[in-house]
Image 1 (cartoon, chains in turn yellow, brown):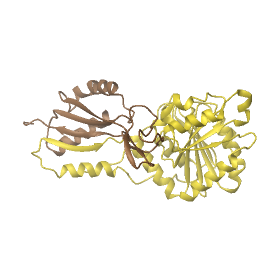
Image 2 (tube, rainbow over the protein chains, first blue to last red):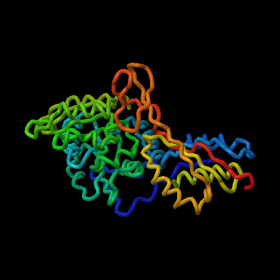
Image 3 (cartoon, each protein chain N blue to C red):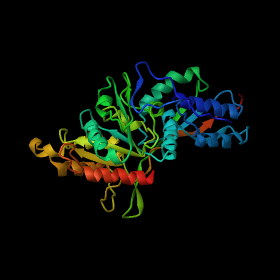
Length: 269
Length: 111
């Protein structure tokens, strides 16, 4: 039984991709290689079974369409030897500011690209636009997260030649993005000192899925009365698997460690 | 639920069945699926599908995590903090509880 991978669905009304710099030239690259083998294998195995059997142990995993597209993205990114990171946080935790500085420092030596998602405006895309870094703004309309299909489309809108790191700046939201694998190699969750130390306890799924947690805006922690050790302990309770780096995109504290993390990720890509 | 019904339709066709009488889903406690919401969707979609009249059964798979220090798995409960009952270490190594799939289908004797 043939079980083709789902085609990219038509985007929702209001969905738009705008390549701000480094737009792809010529024909856009098509993603290929259906990765629904698990489902196909399960179906093929049961199709060979005895027809007269009336109770059938089928064991069909219900991979959501997004997960299949995410696996396709992952193969595409790894095939190009680029490390893809999915940056998630509340609105205002400092994703864009961190990426601006990262493009200006780390991005000078290592070619980076950014896909940035917001409900409306290309403000972040404009802020991140650099001659040396392809950037595409994804405006989702009413959708509160990025999904793997949006990423597949947006990745085709920019020229990824020579790019080693692809930053995906998700829509600011600590809930829904947790459920949508984009095909990233690492999920980075940002928690800023202007939020509560107990946020990991209140929004556990997204922290549970983190490979790296960045505690941001640590330069103002003392002014805010933010207890870094309490926040770190809370992150460890929910996400003992995650690495934690404390950073300030303003003073530069912790950024060397962040860049080292990116280099290590490229080495695995 | 729609993707489940699609899979059931394909499976029924593969077994030459026109109807399905029982659907057993296997769902982990960490799969992020709300059983009430799932049953609501099923009741909305099933009557107009191959699953009309079928019984929906849900097998819940409890979460299990692995403690590296003790080299053993332990039941992790329904929360998000996994603490080894033997040594108190925190674990992020989830070994069960994310399941989401169709475990078993039953077709009526006369299609």
